[in-house]
Amino acid sequence: MAEPIPSPTTLRIASLNLFNYAAPPFSYYHPDDHYTALQWQEKNDWLAKQLTALNPDVIGFEEVFSIEELKIICLTHGLPYFATVTSPKIDEDDPFLFFRPVVAIASKYPFVSTHAVTANQSLLSALNLPTEFKFNRLPIKALINIPDMGPTCFYIVHLKSKRPTPLSHYTDNQFEPHSYANALINETIGRYHSDMQRTLELALLFNDVITTQANQHVHTIVMGDFNDQINAEGLGFIFNSVPDDPNPEEATLGLNDSYPLMTPRTPTHYYRDEGKVLDYILTDKMLSHTDSKFVMQYHALDQHIVNTSPQTQKISSDHALVYIDIVKK
Image 1 (cartoon, rainbow, N blue to C red):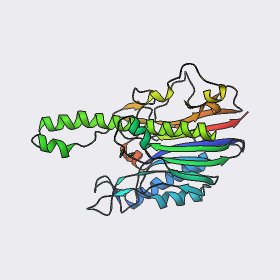
Image 2 (image 1 turned 60 degrees about the vertical axis):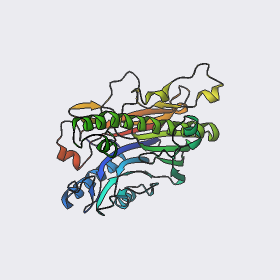
Image 3 (image 1 turned 90 degrees about the vertical axis):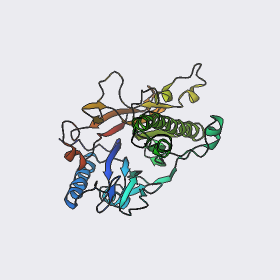
């Protein structure tokens, strides 16, 4: 059943991992992984159906390879303002092979500004970390003037996956290629590096969020694919409370999960039949405060990922579509 179209007093914010959105004849990650013309049409028909039913005011996308194709679909579904901040990477030896997607944002309302969130070199230096650190996928930071809410800063993120970082350039020089020692180092230290990358990406993003909130006093919404559960040890630090809260205005700095507390959570991704929540919409504390003039309602559309085949997910997504309705009291 299609979700109801929101009323004019409702602001609807959505996030969707598009799962290898690459138009043929392009492939993604491997030359054999691509869509036929029919599959590509089915994937876009599915996306169009979601946009028609949801009618979002702002939506963030992850795993975007074909930017122009997505921009056209958004435009025809009432989202004329569209932005990315970088381009997907193409393999040096194969001009039709994508290997690094980007994130995108589409909106009913014009952007005041859009730019990439880059690593804060001063913070990296303070942490004794390499200042040349880069996000695996550059997040978008978009400022939009929202009716009734005012200036609102949207961050679209796709944090580093749990997939181990390949270390073959190191292990092949230390051990016999394809040996057990080679594989063991790749799988263990390679996974550690991915976890470390994902945690540091969120730390750098959080630093930008707090700096922006403190200096500009804007609403904040952070959404996307976090590739881990937000209460996991590596990511949960952003919810740590600070003892002896300062004055009431500064006490509103930070982020809250838009999902209602004490409610069974809908998984947004399944791997080997195990469901986990990887996709989130986080908001500033002012929006979720008891004195807020808004009420938030969280939703997750997961019909396309529950007990479905890989083929079905290929032409839809392997992630749930998550969204929140922000309703004025």
